[in-house]
Image (tube, rainbow, N blue to C red):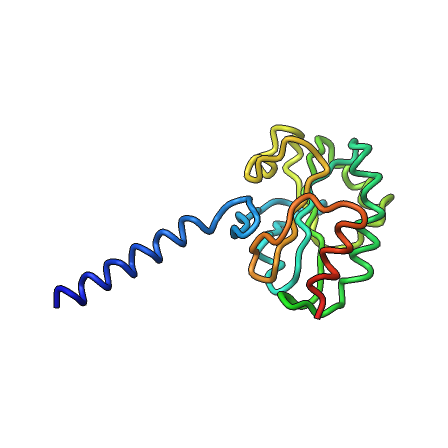
Length: 170
């Protein structure tokens, strides 16, 4: 009986330790949940994307480097959105904006043809609680997630994003 109790205690401790260790912002961690409002005021959650490979992308309309990177993100989205992956079915972008004004945010989405359904912002700029969850101190910044929300890679830009996605295509 003591042996069984000891084994159960060790297993329980291991499981609790793994769960506490999993959530984070490093490669291999489970990405923290984000919940925010889209441009229409509807609630959107990062977990809505489960089952797909996701580029969690932090940006802003006023950010020149972000706007210059957006064509690469659009190109990747169009190329991979319907692909089968080893770790997900399809690809989607989940944008988190660090804008302060809804009008500029919405205009940039339209101008840059960011034609995917996942856009959120709390319109608090650098004081964004959404950005704080991921320790965002500069933009553009992104995280590539698998179908379960586990972080596969960080800060992929230009050809690096395409190469990373290609690596996971079936």
